[in-house]
Image 1 (cartoon, rainbow, N blue to C red):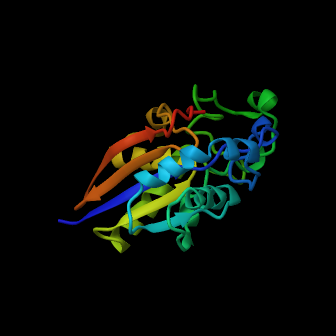
Image 2: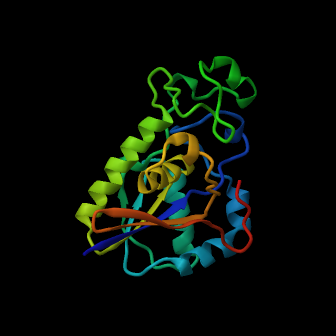
Image 3: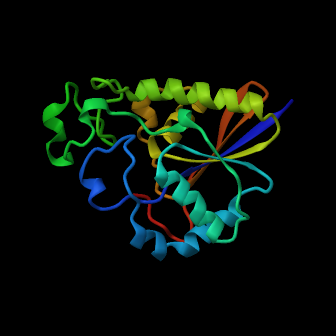
Length: 210
């Protein structure tokens, strides 16, 4: 029986101006000041990660910059594969909307802990339930390609929740109640054909879960 181990890291906190809008899968900047202040946390995170491992980021710069901060903290620099299947939810035409007025553009009541309902599929976007399907397909493919190996994936809060939803066999309504803080570590694995969550939202050196 083979086991593939996934080490999922949520990217660094984004810039304060970007946090005022629904950015989804837009390529927004990170908060450079926060990254500098949390250098010790990146070093601590690097010490938790396996060696050797295959490393992946998404097409968005905030994931690559987070991986580079972990390398700067002492983890040996790695070649970064780009895995588009782990990108954040696309909110389509809602992206760029100020959070303060987002509720006026929704067709369904928002989730308590997410900008939209898990069933809301914005024009030219995807629902969170869609994300669960996309991410589930991606990690199944990666597990098959990397049997008995460790995969470190720097990705996004939504996609990490979706990966846990796939592993646990739960719907978006429940998955969105899982906390995934910035630069936190979540571990899942596929043993044979079965998935499980090993740990969730591990934070480093007291870094708060935003």
